[in-house]
Length: 193
Image 1: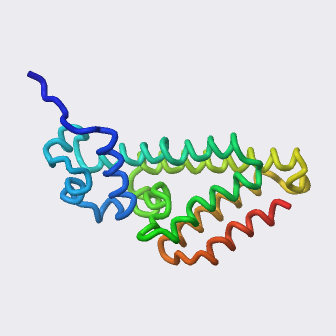
Image 2 (image 1 turned 30 degrees about the vertical axis):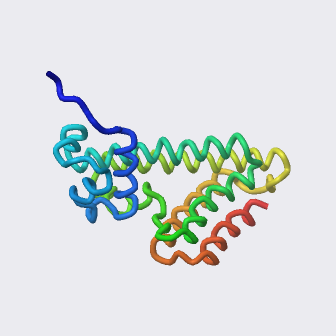
Image 3 (image 1 turned 90 degrees about the horizontal axis):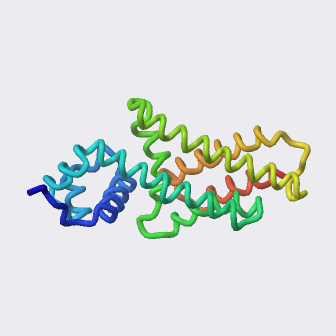
């Protein structure tokens, strides 16, 4: 008789994602994952193979369920300046939550692992390219509507917005002071006018 899973795979992956996102790959042990998910070690190994594969699945879940969904919703529901500000505000809002300065799981992965793991680097780089493309689309929309100055190179501004966001996300982990983080966001928005 085939082995049957007795746990919710989606919920388990969400809990594993939160453990990795909060603590990083190296600092999260298999015992930490067992505690976070409530699933025994043998079942985790049987489902995901090993810790790295579970991490990769969790990172892909974050990328699809959080990052991509957030950008799609903002592009559909906000004016360009509001959409760009909301990306920054999503993370700035973490700083007021108890134990909330996790930053961005993708950026944390870039800092911890991407230099040593080409598969993870490719996933992180692809996500960063999509974020930059989102900024570019919003900037071009804002330039066409008159919300932003048409006198600036939209591609250069999108690249700067991405670099500012990534820098801010590193600051969230080390210096989660709201006034620093909002200054980064405000500087990006000022550069567009």
